[in-house]
Length: 71
Image (cartoon, rainbow, N blue to C red; front, side):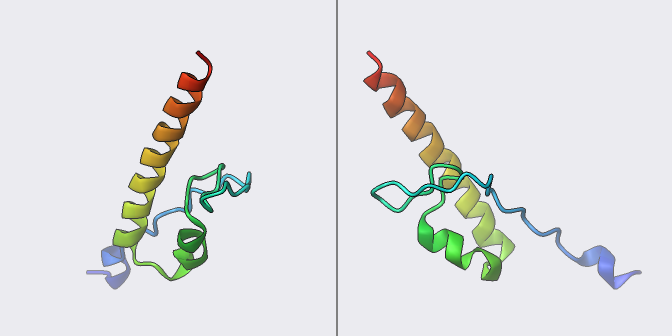
């Protein structure tokens, strides 16, 4: 058996190169907190997966707030 076949695939960064922090230090491009951005390269995949989930929750929350502000 090849040892490399047991390696876990690295979780990709959610960065979309549209960095702009809001007042809460959340990037409005990827929705990571500045601390999550800075720590990303040293995080384990399990932590990265959790951050991705948090980013999605933040994105949805922001979209809901923006859509409510339109009316």
